[in-house]
Amino acid sequence: QGNPRTFFITGGAGFIGSAVVRELIAHTQHNVINVDKLTYAGNLESHSNIEHSERHTFVQADICDAATMQRLFQKHQPDVVMHLAAESHVDRSIDGPAEFIQTNVVGTSVLLEVARAYWKSLQTSAPDKAAGFRFHHISTDEVYGDLEGPEGLFTEQTPYAPSSPYSASKASSDHLVRAWQRTYGLPTLITNCSNNYGPYHFPEKLIPLMILNALAGKPLPVYGNGQQIRDWLFVEDHARALVQVATQGEIGETYNIGGRNEKTNLEVVHTLCDLLQELVPKDTRYRDLITFVKDRPGHDLRYAIDARKIERELGWVPQETFETGLRKTVQWYLANESWWQRVQDGSYQGERLGASA
Ligand code: NAD
Image (cartoon, rainbow, N blue to C red; front, top):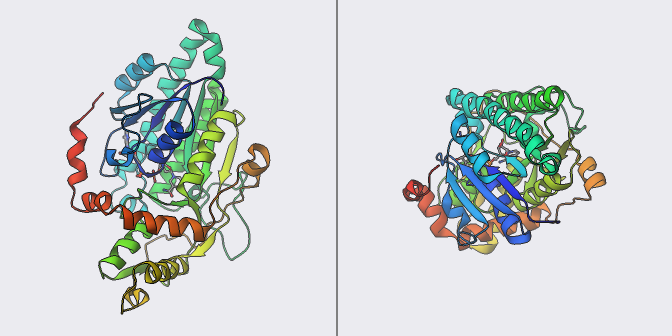
């Protein structure tokens, strides 16, 4: 682990960002500056178990605001930037792409420029600190487009072919990060990960939506024929991988992260229904709630990740299988009704006027 360092986390109130913050506070001695705009997807209640840690500082701010980002870099003097802030929901990107371009593309370019100026200034004021500085961009496997047929995996060499406004905006931000590394020598790292699931997942996403609809006896909407394949990773396994890449990854490198859990969407929903039938028995069958709805335009058919590079070079392996991770997730939603009730009724947003930049 080495000496305590300062991590500047963007999007740390979101699903994956909050898992990274919890991982850093619970399992390392590092300090966390957690910078998040608190859009609908940001939830301070996802930090409930660490909110009293002196090593965690939350700041409400927009990554597109260059002056504020500059001030925060100067004030907190980060050693590592982990950039997770993004608009992340594919359906929302189809309905309104502008916000995705703004945060994911423009916001990333703002952070890169602020980080570059800060890193340059460190080179004269604190050369050792400059030499250890790293900018880690967190991205998605959706930049690769989709795979045709059941064979083949995305590797770090797979050409980019994004399909949705969301994945195109993430692909753009990956390109910007690589350009800042090649042109200016900024010490960057990129990770591209498959679909995450787990605790604190916003209920608009497939797995929590299905759990909560099933518990409420509502229909379980499955796009098209439900045969789209996704490669699932438990969010805490992703968070561990991210901290490992941020601290031990080789500068300039890209690492794919995945759980070797290829499942069709319908298989995922069936498994959830069967778990619920066991954990919350009912006379009726949860599977009977499944309803097929019109497919999403441009819906990618299959994603699957080749994660051998991070396994080989950094020794990372996921701790959860899909079955154990999904069971933990369902149990978490059953035990944390107040968290998701407050998301569903909107009261979680009452917290957001607290700290600001
Ligand atoms: P999320 O939507 O749950 O969280 C995003 C966070 O970013 C929110 O807290 C939001 O308030 C914040 N944010 C949005 N715009 C901002 C802005 N302009 N300034 C500051 N903060 C802002 O997303 P997530 O699922 O946690 O994903 C995090 C990152 O990981 C994203 O970059 C996403 O592309 C990537 N990713 C996600 C998955 C997945 O399955 N969820 C998989 C691979 C990669």
